[in-house]
Length: 339
Ligand code: SF4
Image (cartoon, rainbow, N blue to C red; front, side, top):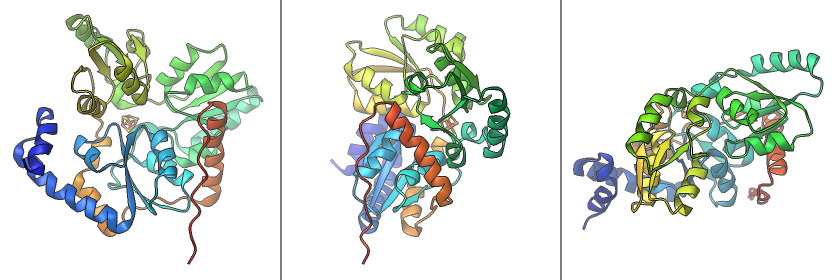
């Protein structure tokens, strides 16, 4: 059996033809060669195209990947994800070169909170609530993280807000995740009016219809979805939370309500279980293709940079999350060896 046949065995059910897999196999071999040549590690977010998982050193959500990058050897990090994720990797790995394979891989949610507008809103709110804490979801730019007291992920947002001593919180940028947090805290959560266009498109009517079609399936919903969709869930989980839940659950069927890439990963990792898709595709997440990884490693493009004072302040907000969220301590940063 050839490598292309093996790839087709994996991806055929996801709509990839034998010819697609033959072309991809050659491109993936080229990525492996360049990866070794550059001393690079490749990190792939859960929502990426499934063929990218074939060359990934780690697959996961954005923060888990950035922390993983600290542990993995390699002078170069190729982040197969979107821009704010690659920025987070740079925040936590300042001595290493971080590359985003395709500059079109942005995020409209992160773009909904511009740093100048955030600074103005914080100044205004602190006039009324001097005790206000600024909590930013990892789906923000480094400049917004630098204005924040603490960061959070969809997995630990409730825990972080409850762990803060402050009574009022400005939550940036996702209003749906803010509503989920507000439902689980007695603090005052002031939501930034942003949303993820992918999760916002999911309606309770569509999810309700799937639930009626598959009544024995567990309904797993991402908290970036609208509150009326979240209200239908058996469990409200981050992407990594969904993977863990499906792996540990005795249930055999699941309806997955988030970006479709996660359903691909679940199918590849747990072929014995059934995952129904109530999902939407993210155009930003799907921007990265294998040929972009090849070009990125060949030309060392597109490098993530930021002013050092922004990086340091953003790192403080990320580290505060790790302290408050009870996450495992970060490994010591790799110190570059100076020749
Ligand atoms: S799924 Fe939503 S939050 Fe994630 S990159 Fe796409 S637009 Fe941004």
